[in-house]
Length: 243
Image 1 (tube, rainbow, N blue to C red):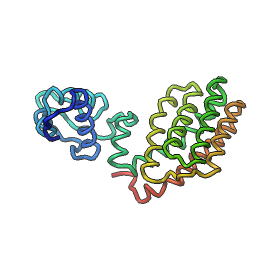
Image 2: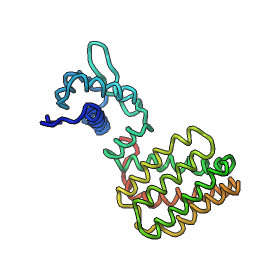
Image 3: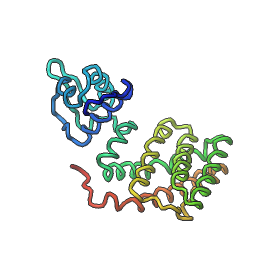
Image 4: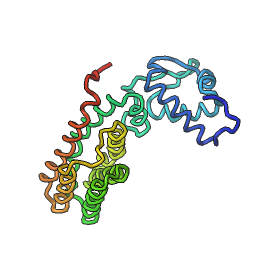
């Protein structure tokens, strides 16, 4: 990070340094097992030691670094990271999009149908109505080819379904689904005009939730995530499972 005649505010600089170090750890520019000193990081990113210390606290909370007395900071392997934290998800999406999209999409296939079933069982009337409204927003945006509006409505729809069943762990998965949908769009895999079947399946999920039909909700959501998996599978074709 080069010096700037008009440096950014401290809070912005702190975020930029967290971002820079986090991406370097994910890309293995700072590989696991390496020990670095705060002074080395200060020179590497051209910031003050106090900014480095603040950034390190964030990275330590994510399981990406561990301070070792008299030695410095050990860069930790991915197995130690808080892998579903939104920051880590975003960094992995930026550095290793194929592997990240595959892993997250496989997780989505496992989770979202069950979340839809729980929503059909436990959602209150207000939540069910909101899910139906979001399905209608998706259809409207899809028919006009407004990709940005469609992405916003799609993310909001899946967030609402994940939250409607009252399972706080499923609800916390909403940021991950948003990253998957954004990543799909970034990879050019979101058509300007979504397939009519996909739009209808979202309505089917919403209708099943409103009708308190968990099996039908699961089946419709399973169709949505299976189609998404198929449409994105070319991104990770040939990507090794383990590196």
